[in-house]
Length: 171
Image 1 (cartoon, rainbow, N blue to C red):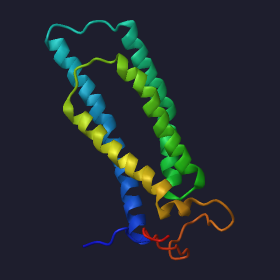
Image 2 (cartoon, one colour; image 1 turned 180 degrees about the vertical axis):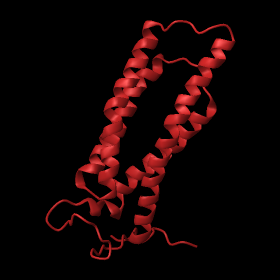
Image 3 (cartoon, rainbow, N blue to C red; image 1 turned 90 degrees about the vertical axis):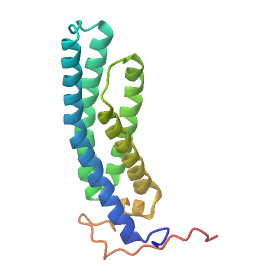
């Protein structure tokens, strides 16, 4: 049975795995969402036509596009920084993730649409991965790898830095 809590090297592997999973899920979610919307439009067209966009739907589409144009470059920049343990990257990732959730909440209250379950399932999996990644970069010993200052090298080598083992029962 694996030790809990895991050692630092194992946490680093989990961190990298979560980061790669987050990127992969995003790259899968975008085309699946586009396909899902096209599928819904085709179904509606076959059922009797697609009504013109209402003002609310226009606001939804515009708001979603605006959020995407700002959030996607910020998310990509944060992933690049997270791979190289830049101190700003975890804050950019947290702020971008939080901002997208906060901005999509009011938009989701206005949205009543037919949906395919697969994109929703991908969203749920991505939310779990994002939450785990945020926990690792802020609450685990890996967070110390994001320390700023002269002791933090530009190229990280995990053999050069020693970390105290976290002891859950240490007083």
